[in-house]
Image 1 (cartoon, rainbow, N blue to C red):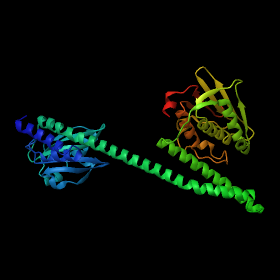
Image 2: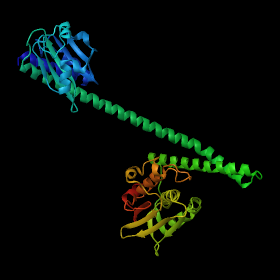
Image 3: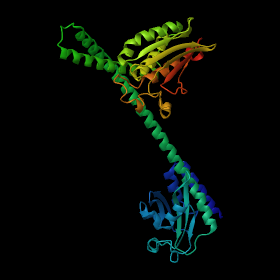
Amino acid sequence: MDLERFRGLIAIQQAIASRGGGLQPALEAVTNERSVMPQANGVVIELRDGDQLYYAAASGASAGLVGLRLPLNASLSGMSILTGQPLRCDDSEQDSRVNRLACRRVGLRSMIVVPIPHNGQTVGVLKYHASGVAAFSEEDMLVAHLLVGPIAVGFSSMAEADAQRAQKALQDIVRLKQQFVSTVSHELRTPLTSIAGALGLLASGAAGELPNTATSLVDVAARNAGRLKRLVDDLLDLDRMDSGQFEYRFARADISVLLRDVAAQNMPFAAQAGVTLRLTLPKRAVSARTDADRLFQAITNLVSNAAKFSPRGSVVDMSLTTSTTGIRIRVSDQGPGIPPEFSARLFDRFTQSPHTEGLTNLPGTGLGLAIAKTIVTQLGGELRLDETVESGAAFEIVLPRESSRRQRAA
Protein backbone atom coordinates (compact mmCIF):
# COMPACT_ATOMS: atom_id res chain seq x y z
CA MET A 1 0.00 0.00 0.00
CA ASP A 2 1.47 3.36 -1.01
CA LEU A 3 2.09 6.22 1.42
CA GLU A 4 -0.69 8.40 0.01
CA ARG A 5 -3.33 5.81 0.87
CA PHE A 6 -2.02 5.55 4.44
CA ARG A 7 -2.30 9.32 4.76
CA GLY A 8 -5.87 9.12 3.50
CA LEU A 9 -6.78 6.56 6.16
CA ILE A 10 -5.29 8.81 8.86
CA ALA A 11 -7.13 11.83 7.44
CA ILE A 12 -10.44 9.95 7.72
CA GLN A 13 -9.78 9.09 11.37
CA GLN A 14 -8.84 12.69 12.17
CA ALA A 15 -11.92 14.07 10.40
CA ILE A 16 -14.20 11.79 12.41
CA ALA A 17 -12.46 12.59 15.71
CA SER A 18 -12.57 16.35 15.10
CA ARG A 19 -16.38 16.16 14.92
CA GLY A 20 -16.75 14.07 18.05
CA GLY A 21 -17.45 10.76 16.31
CA GLY A 22 -20.86 9.47 15.37
CA LEU A 23 -22.41 8.06 12.23
CA GLN A 24 -22.81 11.14 10.04
CA PRO A 25 -19.19 12.34 10.47
CA ALA A 26 -18.02 8.82 9.58
CA LEU A 27 -20.16 8.69 6.43
CA GLU A 28 -18.95 12.09 5.26
CA ALA A 29 -15.29 11.45 6.10
CA VAL A 30 -15.18 8.15 4.22
CA THR A 31 -16.96 9.40 1.10
CA ASN A 32 -15.03 12.70 0.95
CA GLU A 33 -11.51 11.25 1.23
CA ARG A 34 -10.74 10.01 -2.27
CA SER A 35 -6.99 9.39 -1.84
CA VAL A 36 -7.56 5.97 -0.28
CA MET A 37 -9.00 4.69 -3.58
CA PRO A 38 -7.53 6.98 -6.27
CA GLN A 39 -8.75 4.91 -9.23
CA ALA A 40 -12.41 5.28 -8.14
CA ASN A 41 -14.62 7.88 -9.82
CA GLY A 42 -17.30 7.56 -7.16
CA VAL A 43 -17.93 6.45 -3.57
CA VAL A 44 -21.33 5.49 -2.19
CA ILE A 45 -22.56 4.36 1.24
CA GLU A 46 -25.90 2.60 0.86
CA LEU A 47 -27.95 1.73 3.96
CA ARG A 48 -30.76 -0.74 4.33
CA ASP A 49 -34.32 0.40 5.07
CA GLY A 50 -36.61 -2.62 5.16
CA ASP A 51 -36.77 -4.12 1.67
CA GLN A 52 -35.05 -1.09 0.15
CA LEU A 53 -31.63 0.51 0.25
CA TYR A 54 -30.93 4.22 -0.04
CA TYR A 55 -27.89 6.34 -0.83
CA ALA A 56 -26.96 7.84 2.57
CA ALA A 57 -23.72 9.50 1.41
CA ALA A 58 -21.89 9.74 -1.90
CA SER A 59 -19.18 11.64 -3.76
CA GLY A 60 -17.71 11.83 -7.25
CA ALA A 61 -19.92 10.64 -10.09
CA SER A 62 -22.61 9.46 -7.65
CA ALA A 63 -22.73 12.65 -5.54
CA GLY A 64 -26.07 13.74 -7.00
CA LEU A 65 -27.76 10.45 -6.10
CA VAL A 66 -27.90 10.95 -2.31
CA GLY A 67 -31.39 9.96 -1.17
CA LEU A 68 -31.98 7.60 -4.10
CA ARG A 69 -33.92 4.47 -3.13
CA LEU A 70 -33.69 1.10 -4.87
CA PRO A 71 -35.22 -2.33 -4.26
CA LEU A 72 -32.95 -4.44 -2.09
CA ASN A 73 -32.94 -7.34 -4.53
CA ALA A 74 -32.16 -5.31 -7.65
CA SER A 75 -28.44 -4.57 -7.29
CA LEU A 76 -25.05 -5.92 -6.34
CA SER A 77 -25.24 -3.82 -3.15
CA GLY A 78 -28.51 -5.48 -2.16
CA MET A 79 -27.00 -8.89 -2.80
CA SER A 80 -24.08 -8.02 -0.51
CA ILE A 81 -26.48 -6.87 2.23
CA LEU A 82 -28.57 -10.03 1.97
CA THR A 83 -25.60 -12.40 1.94
CA GLY A 84 -23.25 -10.43 4.20
CA GLN A 85 -20.44 -11.07 1.72
CA PRO A 86 -18.10 -8.60 -0.05
CA LEU A 87 -18.63 -8.61 -3.83
CA ARG A 88 -16.74 -7.39 -6.87
CA CYS A 89 -17.77 -6.60 -10.40
CA ASP A 90 -14.95 -6.38 -12.99
CA ASP A 91 -17.12 -5.41 -15.96
CA SER A 92 -20.69 -4.16 -15.64
CA GLU A 93 -21.32 -4.80 -19.34
CA GLN A 94 -20.67 -8.51 -18.83
CA ASP A 95 -22.02 -9.05 -15.28
CA SER A 96 -25.66 -10.20 -15.11
CA ARG A 97 -25.93 -9.20 -11.43
CA VAL A 98 -25.90 -5.46 -12.12
CA ASN A 99 -28.22 -2.95 -13.79
CA ARG A 100 -26.32 -1.92 -16.92
CA LEU A 101 -28.38 1.19 -17.61
CA ALA A 102 -27.91 2.50 -14.04
CA CYS A 103 -24.17 1.82 -14.26
CA ARG A 104 -23.88 3.71 -17.53
CA ARG A 105 -25.60 6.78 -16.05
CA VAL A 106 -22.77 7.29 -13.53
CA GLY A 107 -19.95 5.99 -15.70
CA LEU A 108 -19.57 2.79 -13.70
CA ARG A 109 -17.74 -0.12 -15.34
CA SER A 110 -16.28 -1.92 -12.30
CA MET A 111 -16.87 -1.79 -8.54
CA ILE A 112 -16.30 -3.36 -5.15
CA VAL A 113 -18.98 -3.63 -2.46
CA VAL A 114 -18.18 -4.32 1.22
CA PRO A 115 -20.91 -5.00 3.84
CA ILE A 116 -21.24 -2.84 6.98
CA PRO A 117 -21.92 -4.98 10.07
CA HIS A 118 -23.75 -3.84 13.22
CA ASN A 119 -25.09 -5.99 16.07
CA GLY A 120 -24.79 -9.18 14.05
CA GLN A 121 -26.61 -7.79 11.00
CA THR A 122 -25.60 -6.15 7.71
CA VAL A 123 -26.98 -2.63 7.80
CA GLY A 124 -25.50 -1.34 4.57
CA VAL A 125 -22.54 -1.36 2.17
CA LEU A 126 -19.56 0.76 1.22
CA LYS A 127 -19.19 0.85 -2.59
CA TYR A 128 -16.32 2.15 -4.74
CA HIS A 129 -16.82 2.30 -8.49
CA ALA A 130 -14.58 3.20 -11.42
CA SER A 131 -14.99 3.95 -15.14
CA GLY A 132 -12.41 1.36 -16.18
CA VAL A 133 -12.68 -2.43 -16.40
CA ALA A 134 -11.25 -4.48 -13.50
CA ALA A 135 -10.07 -1.35 -11.69
CA PHE A 136 -10.00 -2.93 -8.22
CA SER A 137 -7.66 -5.52 -6.71
CA GLU A 138 -7.70 -7.66 -3.57
CA GLU A 139 -5.65 -4.95 -1.84
CA ASP A 140 -8.40 -2.45 -2.65
CA MET A 141 -10.94 -4.80 -1.09
CA LEU A 142 -8.83 -4.95 2.10
CA VAL A 143 -8.65 -1.13 2.24
CA ALA A 144 -12.44 -0.94 1.88
CA HIS A 145 -12.79 -3.40 4.76
CA LEU A 146 -10.64 -1.08 6.91
CA LEU A 147 -12.91 1.85 6.07
CA VAL A 148 -16.05 -0.03 7.09
CA GLY A 149 -14.77 -0.07 10.70
CA PRO A 150 -15.34 3.66 11.45
CA ILE A 151 -18.83 3.43 9.91
CA ALA A 152 -19.75 0.46 12.11
CA VAL A 153 -18.44 2.35 15.16
CA GLY A 154 -20.61 5.29 14.12
CA PHE A 155 -23.65 3.02 14.16
CA SER A 156 -22.76 1.86 17.68
CA SER A 157 -22.34 5.46 18.86
CA MET A 158 -25.70 6.38 17.37
CA ALA A 159 -27.38 3.40 19.09
CA GLU A 160 -25.79 4.33 22.41
CA ALA A 161 -26.84 7.97 22.07
CA ASP A 162 -30.38 6.91 21.19
CA ALA A 163 -30.48 4.65 24.24
CA GLN A 164 -29.28 7.48 26.48
CA ARG A 165 -31.90 9.86 25.07
CA ALA A 166 -34.60 7.24 25.56
CA GLN A 167 -33.48 6.62 29.13
CA LYS A 168 -33.51 10.33 29.94
CA ALA A 169 -36.96 10.73 28.36
CA LEU A 170 -38.23 7.81 30.43
CA GLN A 171 -36.78 9.30 33.62
CA ASP A 172 -38.45 12.63 32.81
CA ILE A 173 -41.78 10.88 32.27
CA VAL A 174 -41.48 8.98 35.56
CA ARG A 175 -40.58 12.18 37.44
CA LEU A 176 -43.50 14.08 35.92
CA LYS A 177 -45.85 11.22 36.75
CA GLN A 178 -44.66 11.17 40.37
CA GLN A 179 -45.07 14.96 40.62
CA PHE A 180 -48.55 14.74 39.14
CA VAL A 181 -49.65 11.93 41.48
CA SER A 182 -48.20 13.76 44.49
CA THR A 183 -49.88 17.08 43.61
CA VAL A 184 -53.26 15.56 42.79
CA SER A 185 -53.21 13.41 45.94
CA HIS A 186 -52.53 16.38 48.20
CA GLU A 187 -55.18 18.48 46.45
CA LEU A 188 -57.79 15.73 46.77
CA ARG A 189 -57.26 14.85 50.41
CA THR A 190 -58.85 17.94 51.99
CA PRO A 191 -62.07 18.01 49.91
CA LEU A 192 -62.45 14.22 50.26
CA THR A 193 -62.16 14.50 54.03
CA SER A 194 -64.84 17.20 54.02
CA ILE A 195 -67.13 15.14 51.78
CA ALA A 196 -66.72 12.03 53.94
CA GLY A 197 -67.41 14.06 57.07
CA ALA A 198 -70.52 15.68 55.61
CA LEU A 199 -71.88 12.31 54.45
CA GLY A 200 -71.26 10.89 57.90
CA LEU A 201 -73.26 13.70 59.48
CA LEU A 202 -76.12 13.15 57.05
CA ALA A 203 -76.14 9.41 57.76
CA SER A 204 -76.21 10.06 61.53
CA GLY A 205 -79.28 12.29 61.22
CA ALA A 206 -77.52 15.53 62.13
CA ALA A 207 -79.47 17.31 59.40
CA GLY A 208 -82.72 15.60 60.22
CA GLU A 209 -84.15 12.24 59.37
CA LEU A 210 -83.62 11.22 55.74
CA PRO A 211 -86.16 9.34 53.62
CA ASN A 212 -85.26 5.73 52.87
CA THR A 213 -84.27 6.43 49.27
CA ALA A 214 -81.97 9.24 50.37
CA THR A 215 -80.40 7.05 53.09
CA SER A 216 -79.36 4.41 50.57
CA LEU A 217 -77.88 7.04 48.27
CA VAL A 218 -75.92 8.59 51.16
CA ASP A 219 -74.59 5.12 52.09
CA VAL A 220 -73.39 4.55 48.52
CA ALA A 221 -71.74 7.98 48.42
CA ALA A 222 -70.09 7.41 51.82
CA ARG A 223 -68.64 4.05 50.76
CA ASN A 224 -67.20 5.50 47.57
CA ALA A 225 -65.83 8.55 49.40
CA GLY A 226 -64.13 6.16 51.81
CA ARG A 227 -62.69 4.20 48.90
CA LEU A 228 -61.31 7.37 47.32
CA LYS A 229 -59.84 8.48 50.64
CA ARG A 230 -58.04 5.14 51.07
CA LEU A 231 -56.63 5.46 47.56
CA VAL A 232 -55.42 9.00 48.23
CA ASP A 233 -53.88 7.93 51.56
CA ASP A 234 -52.07 5.06 49.80
CA LEU A 235 -50.78 7.39 47.08
CA LEU A 236 -49.52 9.85 49.68
CA ASP A 237 -47.76 7.03 51.54
CA LEU A 238 -46.04 5.94 48.33
CA ASP A 239 -45.07 9.53 47.58
CA ARG A 240 -43.48 9.86 51.04
CA MET A 241 -41.70 6.52 50.59
CA ASP A 242 -40.28 7.59 47.22
CA SER A 243 -39.11 10.95 48.58
CA GLY A 244 -37.64 9.47 51.79
CA GLN A 245 -40.14 11.31 54.02
CA PHE A 246 -41.88 8.19 55.33
CA GLU A 247 -40.78 8.26 58.97
CA TYR A 248 -40.17 5.29 61.26
CA ARG A 249 -40.01 5.40 65.05
CA PHE A 250 -38.43 2.31 66.52
CA ALA A 251 -39.23 1.15 70.05
CA ARG A 252 -39.79 -2.09 71.95
CA ALA A 253 -43.26 -3.42 71.04
CA ASP A 254 -45.36 -6.39 72.16
CA ILE A 255 -46.18 -8.13 68.88
CA SER A 256 -48.93 -10.26 70.43
CA VAL A 257 -50.78 -7.14 71.55
CA LEU A 258 -50.24 -5.57 68.15
CA LEU A 259 -51.80 -8.58 66.39
CA ARG A 260 -54.81 -8.51 68.72
CA ASP A 261 -55.31 -4.86 67.74
CA VAL A 262 -55.06 -5.75 64.04
CA ALA A 263 -57.67 -8.48 64.46
CA ALA A 264 -60.02 -6.19 66.40
CA GLN A 265 -59.78 -3.36 63.90
CA ASN A 266 -60.31 -5.65 60.89
CA MET A 267 -63.26 -7.57 62.34
CA PRO A 268 -65.88 -5.23 60.78
CA PHE A 269 -64.24 -5.44 57.35
CA ALA A 270 -63.99 -9.24 57.62
CA ALA A 271 -67.65 -9.43 58.64
CA GLN A 272 -68.60 -7.33 55.62
CA ALA A 273 -66.69 -9.83 53.44
CA GLY A 274 -68.40 -12.75 55.21
CA VAL A 275 -65.21 -14.30 56.62
CA THR A 276 -63.91 -15.05 60.11
CA LEU A 277 -60.57 -13.87 61.50
CA ARG A 278 -58.75 -16.45 63.61
CA LEU A 279 -55.71 -15.45 65.66
CA THR A 280 -53.15 -17.92 67.05
CA LEU A 281 -50.58 -16.57 69.52
CA PRO A 282 -47.85 -18.19 71.61
CA LYS A 283 -48.37 -18.44 75.37
CA ARG A 284 -45.49 -16.15 76.17
CA ALA A 285 -45.28 -12.50 75.17
CA VAL A 286 -43.27 -11.78 72.05
CA SER A 287 -41.54 -8.44 71.72
CA ALA A 288 -39.34 -6.85 69.09
CA ARG A 289 -37.79 -3.50 68.42
CA THR A 290 -39.81 -2.07 65.55
CA ASP A 291 -42.22 0.69 64.53
CA ALA A 292 -45.52 -0.67 65.82
CA ASP A 293 -47.68 1.74 63.81
CA ARG A 294 -45.98 0.95 60.51
CA LEU A 295 -46.00 -2.79 61.22
CA PHE A 296 -49.70 -2.52 62.09
CA GLN A 297 -50.29 -0.87 58.70
CA ALA A 298 -48.41 -3.60 56.79
CA ILE A 299 -50.24 -6.47 58.56
CA THR A 300 -53.59 -4.74 58.09
CA ASN A 301 -52.96 -4.59 54.35
CA LEU A 302 -52.31 -8.35 54.30
CA VAL A 303 -55.38 -9.14 56.41
CA SER A 304 -57.73 -6.92 54.39
CA ASN A 305 -56.45 -8.48 51.14
CA ALA A 306 -56.99 -11.99 52.55
CA ALA A 307 -60.53 -11.15 53.70
CA LYS A 308 -61.40 -9.45 50.43
CA PHE A 309 -60.50 -12.40 48.21
CA SER A 310 -61.70 -15.24 50.48
CA PRO A 311 -65.02 -17.00 49.84
CA ARG A 312 -67.86 -16.19 52.23
CA GLY A 313 -67.93 -18.51 55.22
CA SER A 314 -64.17 -19.17 55.13
CA VAL A 315 -61.47 -18.34 57.68
CA VAL A 316 -58.49 -16.00 57.52
CA ASP A 317 -55.74 -17.16 59.87
CA MET A 318 -53.23 -14.92 61.63
CA SER A 319 -50.43 -16.51 63.61
CA LEU A 320 -47.25 -15.55 65.43
CA THR A 321 -44.26 -17.84 65.96
CA THR A 322 -40.72 -17.26 67.19
CA SER A 323 -37.27 -18.67 66.65
CA THR A 324 -33.80 -17.92 68.00
CA THR A 325 -33.20 -15.36 65.27
CA GLY A 326 -36.51 -13.57 64.95
CA ILE A 327 -40.29 -13.65 64.75
CA ARG A 328 -42.66 -14.80 62.03
CA ILE A 329 -46.11 -13.31 61.37
CA ARG A 330 -48.25 -15.36 58.99
CA VAL A 331 -51.51 -14.41 57.27
CA SER A 332 -53.22 -17.14 55.25
CA ASP A 333 -56.57 -17.45 53.49
CA GLN A 334 -58.71 -19.95 51.63
CA GLY A 335 -59.09 -17.87 48.49
CA PRO A 336 -58.06 -18.59 44.87
CA GLY A 337 -54.33 -18.36 45.59
CA ILE A 338 -51.63 -16.72 43.48
CA PRO A 339 -50.95 -18.09 39.97
CA PRO A 340 -47.21 -18.89 39.47
CA GLU A 341 -47.06 -16.65 36.39
CA PHE A 342 -48.24 -13.67 38.48
CA SER A 343 -45.96 -14.12 41.50
CA ALA A 344 -43.11 -12.10 39.96
CA ARG A 345 -45.39 -9.02 39.75
CA LEU A 346 -47.13 -9.61 43.07
CA PHE A 347 -45.61 -6.63 44.87
CA ASP A 348 -45.73 -4.19 41.93
CA ARG A 349 -47.82 -1.03 42.31
CA PHE A 350 -51.34 -0.91 40.88
CA THR A 351 -51.13 -4.61 40.13
CA GLN A 352 -54.00 -7.03 40.64
CA SER A 353 -54.14 -10.52 39.21
CA PRO A 354 -56.77 -11.00 36.48
CA HIS A 355 -57.83 -14.28 38.12
CA THR A 356 -59.34 -12.31 41.06
CA GLU A 357 -61.67 -10.22 38.88
CA GLY A 358 -65.28 -10.63 39.89
CA LEU A 359 -64.42 -12.32 43.19
CA THR A 360 -65.24 -9.32 45.36
CA ASN A 361 -67.22 -6.11 45.42
CA LEU A 362 -65.03 -4.67 48.17
CA PRO A 363 -62.76 -1.75 47.24
CA GLY A 364 -59.09 -2.19 46.40
CA THR A 365 -56.32 -0.02 44.97
CA GLY A 366 -53.65 -2.53 43.98
CA LEU A 367 -51.22 -0.73 46.30
CA GLY A 368 -51.57 -2.65 49.57
CA LEU A 369 -48.92 -5.29 48.95
CA ALA A 370 -46.47 -2.76 47.48
CA ILE A 371 -46.82 -0.57 50.59
CA ALA A 372 -46.57 -3.54 52.96
CA LYS A 373 -43.43 -4.78 51.18
CA THR A 374 -41.72 -1.40 51.47
CA ILE A 375 -42.63 -1.00 55.14
CA VAL A 376 -41.45 -4.47 56.15
CA THR A 377 -38.20 -4.03 54.23
CA GLN A 378 -37.54 -0.69 55.97
CA LEU A 379 -38.24 -2.35 59.30
CA GLY A 380 -35.34 -4.68 58.61
CA GLY A 381 -37.53 -7.65 57.78
CA GLU A 382 -38.80 -9.60 54.81
CA LEU A 383 -42.29 -10.01 53.34
CA ARG A 384 -42.71 -13.06 51.14
CA LEU A 385 -45.30 -15.34 49.61
CA ASP A 386 -45.23 -18.95 50.84
CA GLU A 387 -45.14 -20.69 47.47
CA THR A 388 -45.44 -24.15 49.03
CA VAL A 389 -49.12 -23.53 49.86
CA GLU A 390 -51.34 -25.40 47.38
CA SER A 391 -54.71 -23.94 48.40
CA GLY A 392 -55.30 -20.27 49.08
CA ALA A 393 -52.48 -17.82 49.72
CA ALA A 394 -50.15 -17.32 52.67
CA PHE A 395 -47.87 -14.35 53.33
CA GLU A 396 -45.14 -14.25 55.96
CA ILE A 397 -43.47 -11.31 57.63
CA VAL A 398 -40.12 -12.24 59.17
CA LEU A 399 -38.64 -9.66 61.54
CA PRO A 400 -35.48 -9.61 63.67
CA ARG A 401 -35.95 -9.21 67.40
CA GLU A 402 -33.16 -6.66 67.70
CA SER A 403 -32.44 -3.49 65.76
CA SER A 404 -30.73 -4.15 62.43
CA ARG A 405 -28.50 -1.85 60.44
CA ARG A 406 -31.40 -1.19 58.04
CA GLN A 407 -33.63 -0.16 60.95
CA ARG A 408 -31.01 2.23 62.27
CA ALA A 409 -30.65 3.74 58.79
CA ALA A 410 -34.42 4.18 58.55
